[in-house]
Image (cartoon, rainbow, N blue to C red):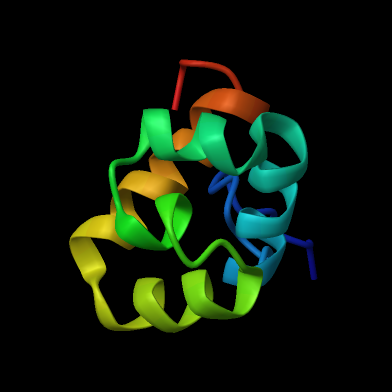
Length: 76
């Protein structure tokens, strides 16, 4: 049996890992410039960001797209 690998760069990556890595790379202010959501501007914490992103699909999509373009190139 052969092992199949996913081409999805988000495969196996949790939302917490996505937010933590982006925050470490850009900082909260840099994230707020790239994704205009209040949890990146005002209540700057991983916990508040995860709470919002888990409930708000459009924002999560933007954050995941930023993660992919930042760490996996523009070819996604």
